[in-house]
Length: 282
Ligand code: HPA
Image 1 (cartoon, rainbow, N blue to C red):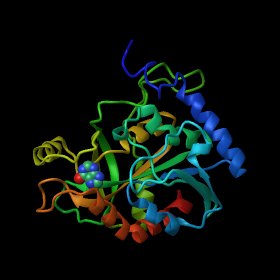
Image 2: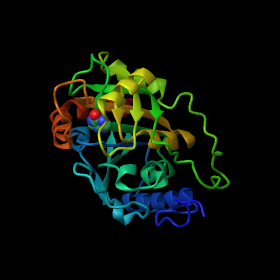
Image 3: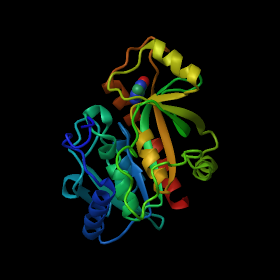
Image 4: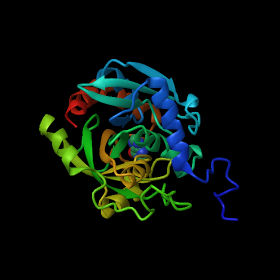
């Protein structure tokens, strides 16, 4: 038996139908389908209120397929609201591989959102800045990623009939059009390549030097698997990293999750208002 398949308690033979079932529950509870989803990363929770007034909120535990989050700063609910005519799902946190979850579980929210009608998926995260010109508190548009998790959400049986095949094209994962819209609102927005590592430990300085050599500008522990799953299903993806710290070895500071959350929180209003301006224009 291949490890991680049917001996794994999270293994589901058809994660697509499971997401469709979660989406049916969600649209029934909310009384509507949706246009766009936003996944809030570490510390971005504080931005949720700046994005808009919620019409409602559903605990993820009520939708099926979502495990309980185990990370401080990540909430276990999805909010919904109207942003200038766009019906928006706001995931107040995410689950990560480092919590012990399978890629299919990590991307269940994104697949549920797309099954609930979303054609746009905005993935936010906290990231270490590798580029010297990034400053703590700065939002950066993700232009591409290096998936260094060693895993794929498309791993496993063929997607069922009616879904795209497993060999997804990743030439333009992060929509050039959506990045253009974001830059039209804030021309100072930088772009960068995001390296996704499994974590949960932070990197060594040698690993950061290696990542820089590989072309990474940002480093984090999320986003890439969700972006692959969203792109596979044809959604347009926008990735926004909030630089919460200089990557390991690039400053005198040691890395601490509490500092990462505090840095994200102090930028919450800025990034929340960016999202609130962006959503009506997607
Ligand atoms: N490395 C990995 N993940 C992170 C970092 C980092 O420096 N900062 C926030 N998330």
